[in-house]
Image 1 (cartoon, rainbow, N blue to C red):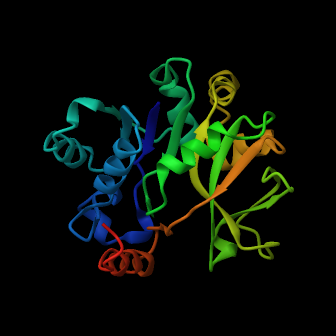
Image 2: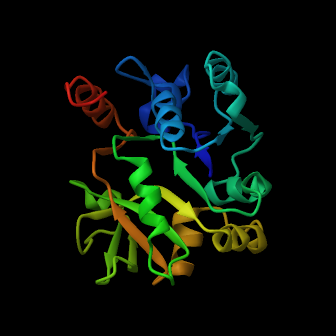
Length: 236
């Protein structure tokens, strides 16, 4: 299985830190955030990873070149940001017609990716994708999901004022080819996975609740939270 790491964002909420460094290279513990993701994906059995680039792209290229697994990491520079769905569409052929992982690299996650992929493989037959979810303490800032008894998403509330729960979309997915085909065939008007893709598949989105921590590294407060987390002995 292959994976796309969405890592091209500007990191505006982390300015001024991200004036001089891309968000994915912000250090957490002894390595950049991107390093944690590459390690976790390769350890889960992913055999090839594509990372999209934009902001301070040369720094990301230099970081990848220093890794021993660099031959299994592919880089896709975006002169202008394509949006999360746009990146998937632009790199449709990377998945070679098979299911693949797509995730936002600006989250810090200690969940077991292997178990997540296994959950997808055991999903209900009607599900075309699996989404990792987590319990958030800031539901108004997240995409909140409502599930049925099978764990399939029935409603999706993207950053609303009065969310119905605190179970949030973790922006980590396994897409079956049907989803990838939809993104390819929908054209440039479909730019964002959360806003333009997920709502089209209500009732067909299986969920797996993260068995570890998941933190959106979008604020300095959350960045410091992640840095404290990796100092705990239980986190490798």
